[in-house]
Image (cartoon, helix red, strand yellow):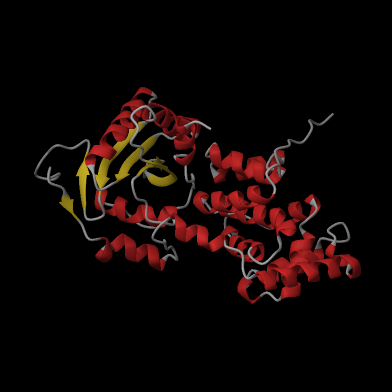
Length: 349
C-alpha cells in the first residue's frame, strides 16, 4: 500500500454515532468539553464534525478523523468527511479541531468548511481548541472571540458534570480504548475452550435451533453482571451464537435502549474465548457498540474479529456500516430488510 493510502486509511473515521444530547451547550467551550464524552476518548490532533438535528439543534452523528501534515492528502480527506456528512443528510454542522497548533489544524478546517458550504450543509460554528483555550474560525469580534484564544476550564464545566451524572465517561486516548479488547490470560481462554467442546457434546440446549428460550434467558441473566460469568456460562453463550441462527437470536435481543449492556456482555465474552470462538461474539460486541452510537468501540471490536477471520461476513458488514458512517437510527429499517449480514431478503414473490 502506498504512503498516501496508508495515511488515508489511518485517517479513516473513528465512528459516527447518534447518541442523544445530555445537556444544553451554550458555546464553543461547552462543545469542546462534551465531545470527548460523545467519542469515548479525548481526541488529539483531530478534526471532529458534529451534526445538529432538528429545530432545537440537537447533537446527532459525531465524526472524527486525524489531522494530516501532508497537504496532498487534505483534499481527499475533506471529500471523505464531507461525503459522509452529505450521505447522512446532515443539515447543520459544528466543526472542531483539537490541536495545539493552528498550522496543523487550519488548512484542513478551511477545506472542510468551504466544501460543506458547496454541498449545502449549514455551518453552526467552527473553532480550534487546545484543551485550555478556543479560537473561532468564523467570528472575528475581539469582544467575544479573542484572537489570543478564549480560556475555559473543562474540570469545572457544567456539561462535564452533567455528562458524568448521565453515566458517560471517556478515556485519555484511543490506546486506552483498545486495551478493553485485550484477551484475558491464556489459561482462562483455554478453560473456556475446553468447556465449549464439552458443551457441544453433552448439552443439546446450546444449539439455537433447539429453542430460543435458553439463549434468551442466559443472555438476559448475564447482562446484569457480565464480569461475574463463570467459565461454563461464558462458554455456553459463546457456543450458542456460533451458528448464524444463534447470532440472529442474539441480535433480536438488542435495541438502542439496552445496547450498552449488550456491548459489555459480548466484550467480556470475547476477551475470554479462544480465537476460534471469537468472531461471532466479537461481531455482537461491535454491533452493540455501533447501535449504541459508539463507533470507535465498534471499530476496535470489529478489527479484532478481522484479525482472526478476515473474511467473516458479519464482521465485514459491520465494518462497511462503520466506513460508510451509517446512522444507528436506521437500524429498524435495516432490521426489516435483514441486510445487516450483508444480505438482503429476497423480494416477496
